[in-house]
Image (tube, rainbow, N blue to C red; front, side):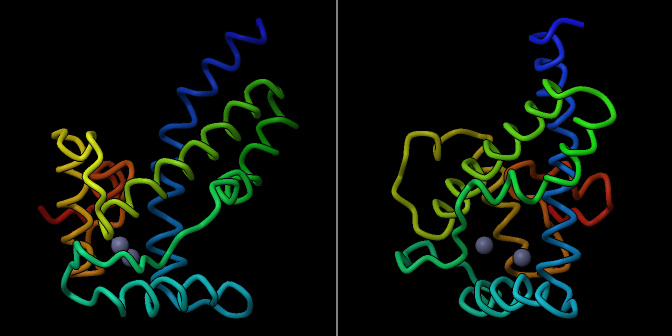
Length: 163
Ligand SMILES: [Zn+2]
Ligand SMILES: [Zn+2]
């Protein structure tokens, strides 16, 4: 297969991959206390981020917590894209890694906007309103609505969506 075709297919396949990764990390790492170094996820998110916005949703707090460099997205999905590279093809793996980075950029932008709004033009789209309402519900009840950038897809799949 041509390199470019493989890369394109990789981009498409990486979207459902990230629906699952985004959901899983949030639900089973950030909201469950794990042993060892993994505990930092829970401390930063469930205690830090949710402690700050407990059951309510401030839209006017510029002191935003929970920001990560987008390259974490490449790191977080490394087991997947490395396996894809070794077992299938490297252009495919590159696309998976690229979507990991893009997810990091997108997640950071929307989550920051949700908690410290700047009024960017895209916040007036139906899509942003949908994911923002979805995340707002997650802060009211952290056992629901774990998807953020790909909301509500992950919660549909795993049955935790609450409108
Ligand atoms: Zn939040
Ligand atoms: Zn959460």
